[in-house]
Image 1 (cartoon, rainbow, N blue to C red):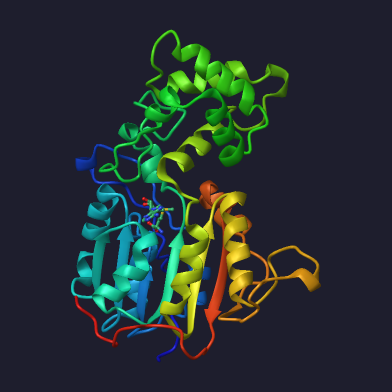
Image 2: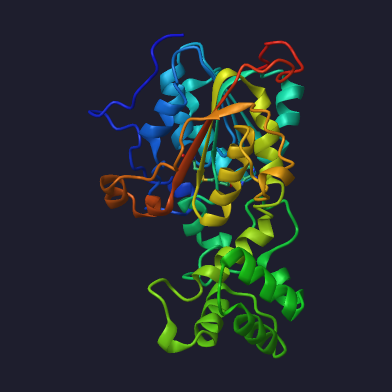
Length: 350
Ligand SMILES: C[S@@+](CC[C@H](N)C(=O)[O-])C[C@H]1O[C@@H](n2cnc3c(N)ncnc32)[C@H](O)[C@@H]1O
């Protein structure tokens, strides 16, 4: 394969762009996180075949396509149709080199088997929501907005954040806020939600944000908005973000060619813990935390760790794109293990 592509310092591919006015969201910036590191770790080069499992607005995908042209191929997935439409327009100049699907990435093994796009040279998963989604007034992800409490990445899904807030028992709410938000005042917040909804449904982001702010002891109000953790928890619950993530990571690595790389970017410790554990297990390390004589881990390595510690954005990136500050990138490389990998021949249906 030709020499791997590096992001050109003189021509940043992570250009800041303005959303189309047609989406009624002017002025929203979109900047792919840890782009240079991602391109280098994925060894993107002409002719490469890649999966971007969380396409978003296509920032990483555009840079990958730039590197793998003229005869490379990229499969892009996202569960958000609005984002897919924006990405499709953005990537138009690479027509014929990509295929975009409205899919949950947890179905990637199935998609790869059904489409015959396998084995691949690299897979990228950039977890969480995009700033586009966060800042889109109608999507209801932000505690700073007055939108309906929605938070669905896939708007064809029925369950919204308002459904959870208005229907779950206090105990269930408390567990979700504690587990997915790591919120120490989860009980108080759940109690306040249940008391408030007895007087009328909680339907708006601003309503919930104010309620949480009042429920958290004033003197303990942290540097972040007091509703940040509750909103994160609800978003994770609505979109079932952590369910099956471990299995997905473990299963998907076998669709890489030997030497192919799997890069995952996460934005909070709950995700990163799952990624770290899954990658260590793939590398044949013990993850059961039992004494060696009781260890039941397979210890059959399928991949090697490329990043022993998570890669974090540098100061300059954080300055240019503050949202990147919590990003952590991990990467594994598939080993040449017989019996693993694609079930179908190396054909691409575009
Ligand atoms: C952080 S953004 C990705 C940004 C993208 N790398 C870019 O440069 O534009 C995460 C995207 O992943 C999507 N997403 C999150 N979970 C998903 C899942 N399980 N399946 C498919 N897409 C998912 C979200 O809808 C969102 O568009």
